[in-house]
Image: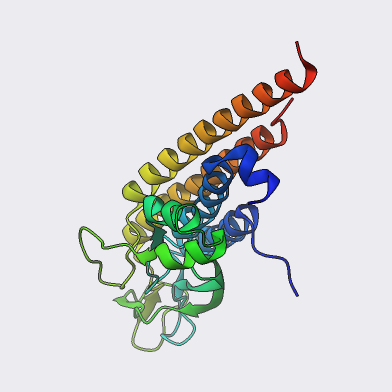
Length: 118
Length: 134
């Protein structure tokens, strides 16, 4: 285990996965009007499990947990992006990214406190 | 090797594509009532064709592949008094469905706004990440 994963635990991998998922959801929103575009997303829990407990890298975990979104209603042009779904998940992902950031912030200030011996 | 596509690239290029779509809609609406002397010279609606540009699995943006002219036919009207009327007294009105164009315009504006929102969120998150540990 390297220093970063010792120090940050699960949160380092979680932040990277959240950021990758942000790009994926942004792609879905960008392609909301492209015919035949198939929306994709990652199963976050599975990806995090693969990246941490199973010890695979973030890249491999990402590939292993990516899937296609099943639309609630199919559209005539073959596009599977449903904007309301994507926007909700995007907002949720952004919020959880912030949560992970504050966990990391907490970890960093704890270590800084220990280092300074205050 | 080109650098991986960021959220800024994804949303930025999507915004350009949507703007292109808005431009075609504007052209179509501007020409909605225009009259022509023959079916060949009459204005036909312009439609952009969107195409996905994939960077890596699951990460893709969009671009306008080409702009095609719609197959909607101009409407023939019998108007012998019109200065552009042909020998039979017919004129052709541009093949533009203005109701459909208005719907298209609103949809384009909404999707443009969505991309702006994505960009704004990504920007704030990046700035927050930069402040980590301070």
